[in-house]
Length: 228
Image (cartoon, rainbow, N blue to C red; front, side, top):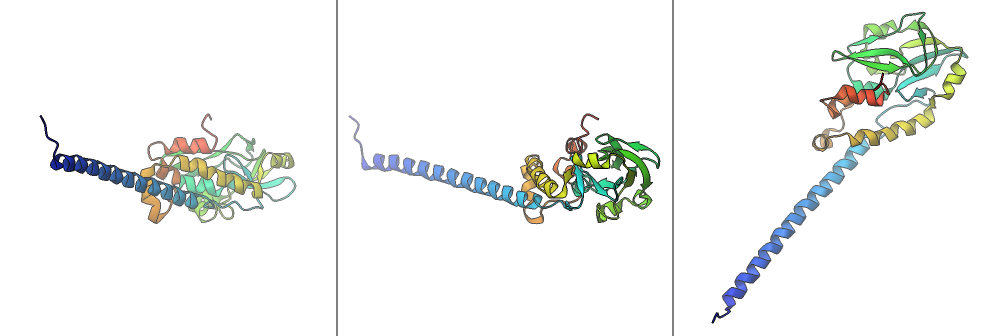
């Protein structure tokens, strides 16, 4: 006949206590990781929202090009701040020549980045009447200010008034660009998110930073040229 001793009771309770401590430890670790993940998410979202400039006096195509009316049928066009920060350093710009015609929503020009061609959609119909040769010779001017000295083309557009109706005015574009932050955030590798906690988001060449293996495909998705 087996005799149950206080030692057996103590051993049993000791195992139970150890199991409780182990489970509590696991719970604490997972809670810490969850809190850290949520804090990382909040930090990255704060970094993304409001990161891109969208002046209200401009009109924006959803392929991330802009229009600034200079007259009833004359427009200045370029790439927006979102596009600039996504592509980073531009090696070369292939602009249409003076006298060539553009079509709204069709490929208007391309950027060469790390040997890859990034196509951009024209925000207006019309004839190219002037190109910004300073930008062609020194693409860094886009980084200085894509809405001022970084403009690309001036276009004579008889359909300018109707073209503008297909674009987003500045006050609406700001909300639109902010909403892209959520899409952009969904593509961030959490390992990168942890690295960004102290330094913040990289603001030049974000596509490459967020998706090093297929950044050009990410640009095509956001610039609406995936099937072009």
